[in-house]
Length: 469
Image 1: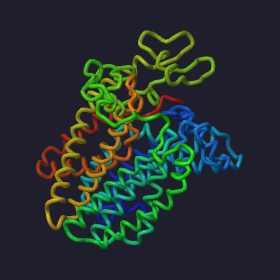
Image 2: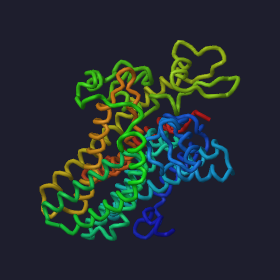
Image 3: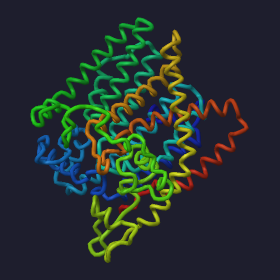
Image 4: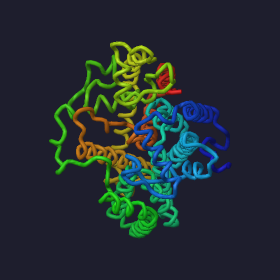
């Protein structure tokens, strides 16, 4: 246990700021897990159907759930619990949410461990990374849902941490250890493949620049272990759906940027981005929807609700959108649409400041990536920050390719920041590093930074707590 909590210590002592920030962040995650209705979320009923089918001792097919293409790891423990008959399907789904709170604890401790490996004893880096992660509504929202992305975020940090330690020690260690993490990563959600591609490119650059062929051999064995672990599911998906990359809708016949209209790439939604940033605003416009998903609740599954007063049932999908309209809710429907829409507009405006810090973090990572590729030998911090930047860039490029291959021009309902949940802890580390460097150069701004973060957090705090309870 001491080793697990070691990232909360600095110079052999508990750091009260780190402990308090970690406790507060994870307390909010746990509170949301306890309160949030598990039937509310992106395709929530389909994820619950997956748990029910898995509890019957079989992997689902198209006829069982629209999430048939999702890997099984996030549903295994809830399905096992349901199979015991100790809980109902609702209890099994609630257990999945509570498991997310444990994953969050792991994510925060791994994030701090990564910070320590990259910059030993740098308190500002650790505090800055936790502060930016704790400001992101997308983090708390995503961990309230029954989904696989929290597992992807957890295993991404495990893989990245192992890779950074391997660079520092000049060896990957026992290949099967990393291989197991890689296998579990792609058994969490397919987004994990982009993390693996980043790791392969990272090791490839090292091999090319420094001739570290033993590292390549170790990575190959790790990939082999991961492939063996993941193969049964993807073979099942290939047999049942015709492809290991199957999805619940058909892709366009050919991949082309023209699959999406110009508004997808160029739309900014400035008319409502800071006044009412929820659907149906800026239909299928990538940047304003994604921004509003990061800092708010564009798709209305976390903060905005419409509920039948008689039954207490939350509405979802198009029923929610029509009921929670600005023209007034129908009789018998309770909704917070008008007040919350205006508040989220203000959140989007205030969040321009932390967005600039995230952008500075990404620039910091790109600078480290350039140094990693050009400087010989690269330092451990440059290598680690470069791997973070590579993972973010490849994940973003892969997600954009997905949106182009599977366009939904009417609404853009696959534009969800939750799909890229795993990049936000990495961005938080890079942003913490950028803040640390800035404050080392201009220490007089420390109080200004603390005051700004406190103001932004207090304004954003209501956006971190679910209203679906």
